[in-house]
Image (cartoon, rainbow, N blue to C red; front, side, top):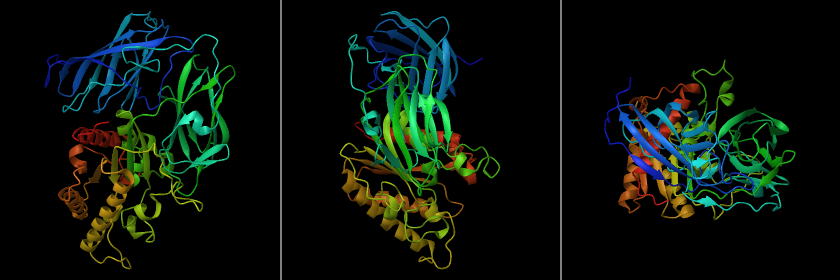
Length: 500
């Protein structure tokens, strides 16, 4: 029996308002011709060390509904363990609750309730702020219904159908891309939708209304269909799981099923985060539960950038994001001293298609101005011993070059995004090898701060103190570890005076 006393804080009651739902996809309309709107009251009813209970009142402000689906995102690592008056699924920070068989109908002005028990981190338990009912943000007001009989022209062209902030290049009727975690989000009406793909190298996750409905393994040239959905408006999200710096994938957009239509894309999120890094950022082998992946599908089948810490952090904060990462790359030195010609900042960071022969500098659109840039480069610089033939003979010499290159890269980012962007330098524990990594990052941040750049900070991932198991392929963070990293990063961002 869980204790009912409050452990560290009093019960919290809050009526929350959201601009857009954070279910990993952008959401808007409820039904084709119905006024929609909702209000959610979220209350922590009891709290104790390691756990808490909460009550959620859902008030329907629009036309009557016969079934409902409530979504929200936690921001501090909370996890629902049981729920009553409905069914629940949770993927990373994203929670999806659907009605029970007996409480699906909510008339105009009526309220229904769900309750749940959950775990928390004993440090913070913030109230979610992105509730959405049947895809409509719960703002406390209603949306304007679509007039009966009205028509609109279906959007054509991939980038007119879907939202993406990922680095893509238009190619005929499709877009090409290579960076891990590239994602596309669209809306459709009906009971099904097709996704046009041409990619024999990568794996993808397909999500509808926030729930994963398919994992596509090297699909090739195909139209993948999702069918059998309830009629109405839906959101669909396609996310690239794997790395392919030498091979581009192609997405040809959405196709409406019989009797359905592709809807106008929803408004982009106002929050933006750019993640720059190596295999940790790319989600290398994060789905594995064993460090040796030779017998469970290999690194590629066990990699999913869409659940790496960057994606989890961004989704929890309802932010759009880019993942600019490449396993084995460093700031000045790559893993084991390999590929001495290029590293990530000098060879690939600016590129649209990474290492392809026709790769060009990605033209930064005026719509991409991240308020936060998170950098994780240095593990590959320092985690392996120097070898003969490298230009450094001592770790001190390597560290000096690392600091100089890092400062130059920060200067480039300042030129690119301005002085208002917050930049976070992350680093894990490499004390088994050297403390030069940690010492260098601290020196870089201090030098920037002393020079008047106060919006540069560092975040240390203490692997042992955080309880990371590193059970991903080849001693990389596991899916559980990425949740830990996302929680740590979210806490750090909460300490910054961000006005987003």
